[in-house]
Image 1 (cartoon, rainbow, N blue to C red):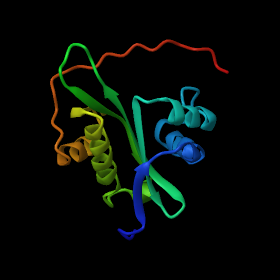
Image 2 (cartoon, rainbow, N blue to C red; image 1 turned 90 degrees about the vertical axis):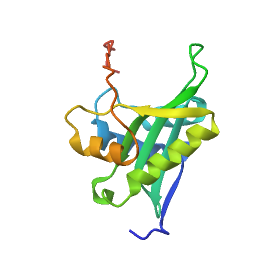
Image 3 (cartoon, rainbow, N blue to C red; image 1 turned 135 degrees about the horizontal axis):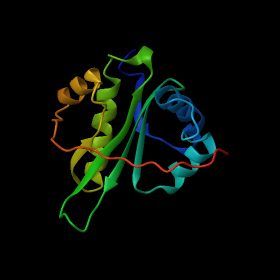
Image 4 (spheres, one colour; image 1 turned 45 degrees about the horizontal axis):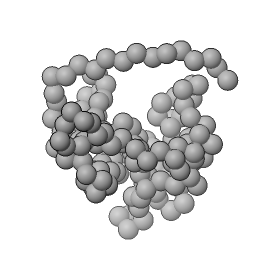
Amino acid sequence: MREDVLRIRLASAGDADELQKLNALFNGDDYYCNSPDGIAASLEENQQEIVCVAEEGDALVGFCCGQLFKSICYSVNYGEITELFVAEEYRRRGVAAKLIAFIEAEFQKRGANGFQLFTGEENAAAQAFYRSQGYSETSETMFRKRIERESK
């Protein structure tokens, strides 16, 4: 991969088909994953989410999603990186680091004063990567509750 060929940019609705394929590789192709039409609509309508993509030539090779959080409880806003994925053949080439740097800059433009993310407890490679990007572990525990939906 030549440095001048890789491009990091904000995603657009025209990226929906390729984003859906990358997301299926990342999260699996279950009914919780969004369709290309759903992805395109979200990219056009969701003002809270930032989605950036890594592009080489005409192909998307990775993506990073994040949410900007504002709360009445705090005088500062923060960005949460919710998804980060790079196609396997492009890993260990600095693509993820470029995606992280890009989304952090976008968060800062929109008023974020800090960043957070969650990763799997067993995902040592991701943890090492995030540490290398300046993130540190906290003592917080995440809780989640899912509501089952009917399949379409």
